Image 1 (cartoon, one colour):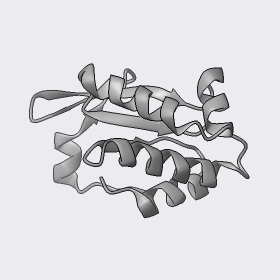
Image 2 (cartoon, rainbow, N blue to C red):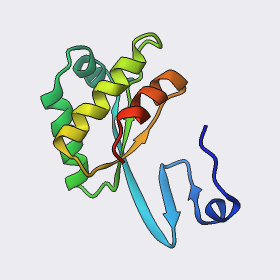
Image 3 (cartoon, rainbow, N blue to C red):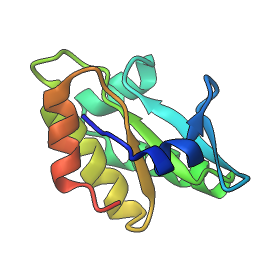
Image 4 (cartoon, rainbow, N blue to C red):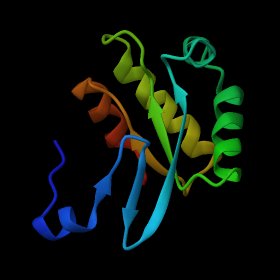
Length: 117
């Protein structure tokens, strides 16, 4: 669970379009790497790192400040799949800021443990 201090809460606001405003700057979060999308689920299942890396790079080049990673796979497999996604994206874009997206605490933990940013 992530908690923010009162000061941080006042500075941090998120709307339903996955945009946030911090000190007046809109931050864009690319969210195409989502395992609930068929082509992404296939790439995750086949460990197609080339496809995932290309998609990550395209979103950053299009102006995304953060990349949302959501394995969206079976709960038993999701921790390993999330860790693979984080590793794969960070191999391609070592300085990218990530937004890990899952309702599965084990998947979030697996991703957080290896995430650089």
